[in-house]
Length: 591
Image 1 (cartoon, rainbow, N blue to C red):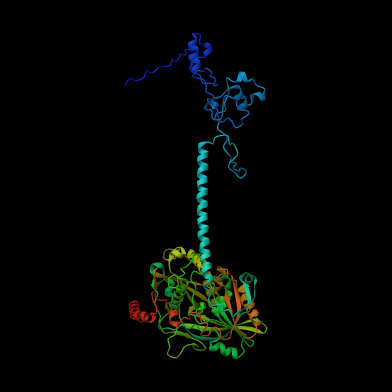
Image 2 (image 1 turned 180 degrees about the vertical axis):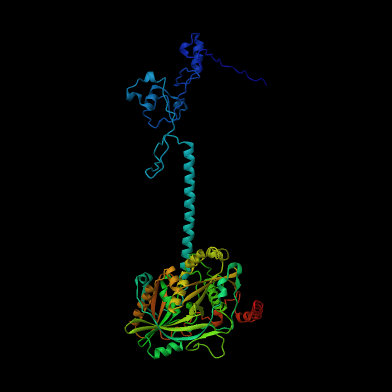
């Protein structure tokens, strides 16, 4: 195979300078002129220059060729030589020499080009990005990269915000949706709704109550052991179980002392501190609760149902994180409420001095039988004046007594419980010793209603000090064994100011509810907190309501003391009997 011959094109030599020679200066033959002309690009002028001269613009890439009528006939938008068009038309179009009075023929051979970069935008309050500004000018590479990074950052931030709001809205929706089907009491169709009170009206109420009067003090109190004030997360103490001590949850109308005071016409309104605290802190509540109201003659009794929500302690009620909905889950609202009540009772008995010494009062415990071992508790019956012809008597509880400055001081004992640090986001074992304020702030956010009710009960009982224990599970999945990590003490009035609990507003809520109920006729009513809306409703119910047929899942006394067993389907008694020897061995080992 023979390769074809390759013809070399004649390259003229320019002895006067750089580049191809000018066709007009070539004095040789016509063939030389044709060869030189063939080496020149069309419509591209060339000026001879030396190496010391500064180069101007070789190609105009910024020309505006969008006007078809003004486009030269030899060039087009798709013509690659259009950017090299330095003819008089192109120069006049790009630089406006004709309009300025210049000579296009003389200036066509030379053009001074401004090589300075465009001014950088001034980022400030007066500058706003205009996407149409300098559209025909190519951006600098550095500015383009910065703008690209900003756009990517904005997109990422918008995506995170969208996912965050979506998840938060789903959590809020699921929580309210679940709460809407978990009313504390079943609303029967024959009930007649009389009033519907939104919580927004409670915030405007205020009532200045006078100092109360002590009518009676019953029961007996054991002394507080100050050794527990020195407990730290590094020196934790195991929470013991007190199964032999009885705790009483007696409603108002079943209290023999209140019946006697009502018969003696000592007051017109009767309640307990737990019921009053639920009313006083109603705007902070999220879960549903209910109070039974009985109007008998000119007397008004605020009662609770057997197995009511008021007997349990809410956990993570005011938190935004949802709890599992399954009732048998150890971290469900019901299971945690039973566990919290169990922890609270055992904590109130463990921090006492066990030397048999008790502080006795006017009368013995009105609910205990002879020879029965009862918990350390005192009942203080106090009377408040709500109007000239209206007084309120409430039974208030105290759990312990201590000697402070050679004076007898009454204490209330309560315990906060940690079940899983993942829900609260704060690990007590790491933060309690170094960041105690952060732990308390987190609990105020997650359990604001419970802490407010404890403070209200301490104020009603006129306690000198309220002790709050921090109790955590040994393991997040073990809801039977707990340890005490710390014990803190607060004065009720100071703590009320710290959590923004207004005493005048609390009594204003009670006074408004009492005035509303005193206008009702004789009968039985129920006040129910709506599970999905911040409001309460008052229903008129039949006289036999909340007897055997109306009780919703009553809790026996032993279930209120111990947390529910896992996987116990109809065999709770058998499991409890099987665990009894283990509990005794554990108690003997701790002793």
